[in-house]
Image 1 (spheres, rainbow, N blue to C red):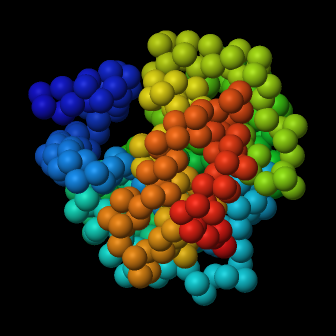
Image 2: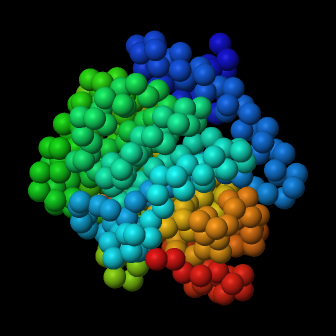
Length: 366
Ligand SMILES: C[S@@+](CC[C@H](N)C(=O)[O-])C[C@H]1O[C@@H](n2cnc3c(N)ncnc32)[C@H](O)[C@@H]1O
Ligand code: SF4
């Protein structure tokens, strides 16, 4: 089967976890099959643009809105200015987002990670997933704002995965995200399962919760509830105001990494661990290597925690942005994509990135 072969080539773990789910949801399997050709087409497009010295990433992260109903401790989006409510009028409207996604598709982007802010607060969000049905959408949500009308549409969409943020068990989640958020998030996961929407969890790993996630019973319990994907992203301190002490130490990171590799080999869950998985790609995959990011106002930045840009997509083309010196120089100066014992390469090289930004005439967004 073609889908099986592709999943195996991209990542054998995808096949192990995803195929049993798809077989239990035959209508989804049928639709996922329909994504195979567009996926192969994007590989050809990317190859073609590479010959013109334009590196197109497979994924784009879209911080779709500045709006958020929570105030989670240490949120990178708040720290880099994405959540600036005084600038809300400046955010892209749905027509502008559609124009950007259309261009990205023509360049060979296959997947979109919708974040923010809280994506489900953006009006008509799911129109994007519906219109671009031959692309994969992964929505990261705090799980408190998905309405019945969203569920009705999500049930029919077969190109959209919903990841709900959790910090750990009730006490830890509510401590960081606010009272009652844990209960709402779990309820959302339950409803997503009931609706047959492929779903998972997105966890920020800190000093306070990493041990909890190393307890196999805790993850087994979630898998039993139907969760099939987990993003474990180690806490990144993205501004001097943030609490650096939340970050794992190098020893803790190594300890946690071992557990992640163990889970990957033994648990029925598709797991992404950052920064650990970057080892497989020779360092950070921002700046167009694996993904790039667009702010709510249309600035093209190397990654969601970075606030430097040379192109704004209200007026500039994405193609020019990908071809620009900012991304190229970050990639060419390979040491900038090394983590240096922190969870984030761009965080580790803030001074150098600032200097490079000056050289290429970049501006600071938000
Ligand atoms: C910025 S949020 C946007 C989507 C949505 N509002 C939510 O909370 O799921 C995207 C993801 O980033 C995580 N996150 C927030 N601040 C972080 C930080 N400083 N380091 C690493 N991940 C962080 C959140 O927990 C969430 O899973
Ligand atoms: S819900 Fe998401 S965007 Fe909002 S404050 Fe929390 S982590 Fe940040």
